[in-house]
Length: 427
Ligand code: NAD
Image (cartoon, rainbow, N blue to C red; front, side, top):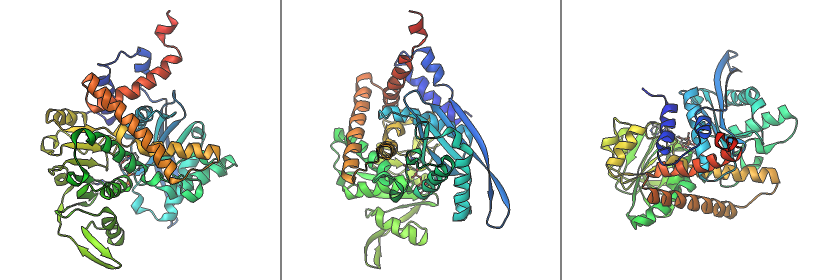
């Protein structure tokens, strides 16, 4: 079995068929620049000491300080964090942000920790990696099972270490602690902008477009809510416990209210005060949700959800990758043969890092923007870069994924080449 990082790199090898890259560039993109592994001792509420393992990988900083989220998950490992840092490098280049790529994570099941334990763990992680992060070096952000509150604790710990307020060290902070408006919904909103540009070519009106969404967390929920508000038909949703599918369109906000109230997914038709009417719905497994016959399947959970095992059973016409790496390279080939259009993660989920970039800019300038300015700037970047990728795919007859990689790698390669390559010095 190949490692996740080998899978991630195979996309680079695919792109090299269509572009002549200097050997210097290829070699630089094979290895992360820095990979730090740390142990974080935490005093638990019962007095016991537990030691957690954490990582921070900075893949490449040629185009600017490195940028990437922090994940809290029991499966976190160095291979996964390295792959995610590689994807961040490509993603920042695809949307033209002045950043390189990084990622961090802690191997932990956050639901098993009390809030105070979680705070001690978050602060301990920052103490362990403080030497290699900073507003001009490496800027973390939230990812799976981390949120604005955790970013606020982490930023505060960094200020205490550095003895000054440096809010640009971390993005995705609470709005009242120098965060940016629009960061919560940015990934879902950005993905929706990309989908709208893509569907223009198919003349599919929202009210005739059915959507199933795997992963009803931050990114999946905001995407679902914004798509529903535009009139798209949300017919299925799932989280780690399973999914629901309904003939009556699901209202994501009402489903979320219900999930917050009793931790289950139920199809709510409407609520008037405390009186709610439930729609008929069927419970489906996560595997079944992926195989539904819908126009758009949205993957917003974790890596490797569509693999060789289930790729042949996928019936959606278009797949929107909000999660990072949800489709294996082997599955990509099967989906291509079946004529299913895959809108790739490095473009689709870039709205999150784009509004993180806006937060960093606002923190550094000390001047804060309103919602309409954030949304307008996000739309401009996502629409422009999505169409750049679609045009490249058409011109070079490439998959959308290869076109997105080619678009990003052209920018990275340009930056590396400007420093001088073997060819330059042999002139
Ligand atoms: P989150 O922790 O808020 O939500 C993850 C959701 O996935 C949860 O609802 C969880 O129950 C569900 N889930 C987990 N395993 C599942 C499974 N097997 N089947 C169905 N659902 C499952 O995380 P998030 O921030 O929404 O991130 C989701 C994905 O999007 C990740 O791959 C992340 O890297 C990517 N992403 C997020 C952002 C962001 O800004 N939040 C930005 C870019 C990429």
